Image (cartoon, rainbow, N blue to C red):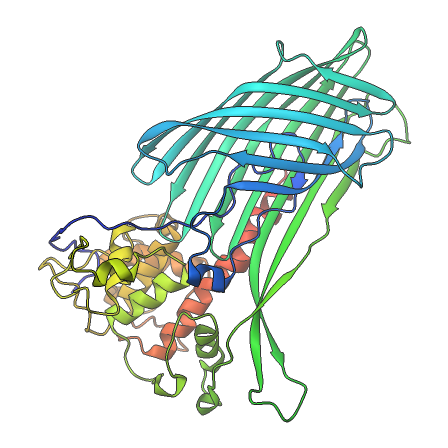
Amino acid sequence: MKILNRGIAFFIGLSIFTTSVYANPLDFGIFGGITEGRKLPKTTEQLLNTNKNAKNDLKSTYKEVIFLSGEPKEYNGNITVSSKAPDLQDKGTYKVSYKVQDGETTPEGMSIARNVDYNVNYRKEGNQTIKDYEVSKWTENITAGGKTYTLDNKESKSSISIIEDKTPGVTYYKGDVSHRAVYKDGEDKVVQEISGVIYGYNSAWSSTETQRLNCTVTTKDWQMEYQVRPSVSVNKTLEYSKNEPTAISFEGNYKEVMQNKSGLSYNIYVLPQQSSAIPVSGNVSIPSFNTFEQLIAPDTSYLKGHFAEEDIKKMFAMQIVTGEPKFYKPNQAITRGQFTKMLVKAIKLPIQDNKNVTNKKAPVDIIFSDVLPEREEYPYITAAYKSGLVVGETNGRFSIDDPIQRQEAIVILLRALGLEHLGLDPTPITPFVDDQHIGNWAKREIYAANRIGIISGDTDGKFNPKLFINKAEAAAIINRLINYMRYDMEVDYTENIVNFAD
């Protein structure tokens, strides 16, 4: 049995899948500013599916460093980002608007009134979407350093192109931005040119965007060259809190902490004049405002001393595993269906409404002959198949009740992240001493999983690819996956880019 071989599909009707809205590319524009970012949905919101009709708008505190006067001036205000993006079809156009305006914390003598509308032309090819932004309206007035700068929109231009790649658990994107803003200061002209790259990703556990912008400001008398590196991240972390009272029915519980990290750094390479009073580098940040959600407190006392006690407790707390904890047998082999269900819930992959499945008149998909609507794993396996996470066997079956091998589990785990390419050659040599026993169809993903730290060998350096995974090991592996999505990805998209030397 190989999880890579595509099964025979039996299609009956069409199912509707809901989607969740997280952060969008360019949530803070291309002018080098930062926002608080979009908060990720809470667990209860996702379970209730309250986010499915949410407007794709952002209203946030906004900070930017203005260089038009020849020295950096920190601006505080507000930004509203409005997007009229429908469910994207194969191609089309939608509108994105940015509005920056002053707020209660705006410094005296400073002001930004910026309104920019883009028409976004997009086209989809498989899992990838190309988005090209075209300015339809741009008005702007900036006051800083005792002067007011008014945009000449006839001479100003902006160009943005982004590619998004949607994998089952993460949407990645990168893009190039360039604009030329021409301002009038009385009879004088000030030209600001910005060009650079953006990198970002969205997932259920964290969302990050980092920009690296090379900028110049030119007047008839002087020129300044500098670089701005804004970065905005939001994530959900897990913290355990032990209860203080003795007479309480549960020892403690986990809580999810939703937090933001927003900051920008700048470096000036060419000063308009020799002056020690002008700082050549600096940092600006927006303080994090944390929100919390209490998670259920499962009774896992029977697992005291078990190596996966904390992993299993977290799976129940996050509702990735449900039911009575005492019936969860950690040393029992986990089936292909059970593991797929856990993984789908861990990456928050949208599933079809169970009400439609039980309605006999509603169309349903029977993709695998042994995965029927009455099975509790049905909507999760269906979602996994439609997202490209699993493909089944050549005989049209999923083998839902068969135990899953270690190598099979890691293949779909890496497919959830879309990081198979980190395995380099299609059949690389893995660092495990039993590499010869790993199926060639699984080596690339196993190599990649080891490279990013999700798996490692045992005390003998073995991977044991054909051993069946038990429920305790499944909880540990999926918890590592979530931690990778919470922490390691964020570091790669923030510190590694912000600290990158050109």
